[in-house]
Length: 191
Ligand code: AP5
Ligand code: MG
Image (cartoon, rainbow, N blue to C red):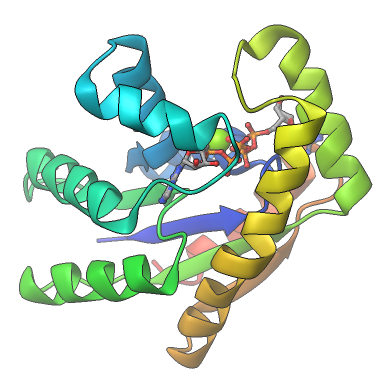
């Protein structure tokens, strides 16, 4: 099994690269952001709570996210090649919950792929996407807040996996194909 975390700042290319990884390695994709946006579109109670946080660029409370994730991982069953987690874990508390969930199921995370992209490029990509995405968080004010939240709450997750020797830093600047080549080299070495 190949279980991968893809992380990095808002707009670094997690979703874009996840699609390519899913295709090449036949993994199941789990994006907590996508799951929350689906709840919002369906106007569920959870979606309405999440909307308040997302539109302000804040993280949704840990326990809410851990519950959603556990439910969705279970639904995949055991007969899969692996999972790619996109946008989770986003806090050290989420990483700890993930590790105990995996251990309980005799599974393990192979590697965390950390995409690094310059701040100006992140903002350019998200502003551009905001012209068509309809995402309530793709505006300059919320993007700025998301970048701040990333630095204070999510960046420590990289250290958590660095300490477990499961960390790969990837240069996230360049063309989508160039970046995918760099990620593939790391994943191939974990097969
Ligand atoms: P989430 O949906 O995870 O958003 P994010 O982390 O802010 O990241 P994005 O989805 O905006 O960017 P991405 O890295 O996927 O980049 P993409 O490939 O789209 O989370 C949203 C919110 O939900 C959070 O703020 C939080 O409130 C909540 N949430 C989610 N998970 C949570 C959790 N675990 N705990 C608590 N709260 C949680 O690329 C961006 C753009 O750039 C695209 O238009 C793309 O086409 C373009 N692009 C991609 N690669 C390149 C390239 N190489 N060159 C040029 N353009 C490129
Ligand atoms: Mg995304």
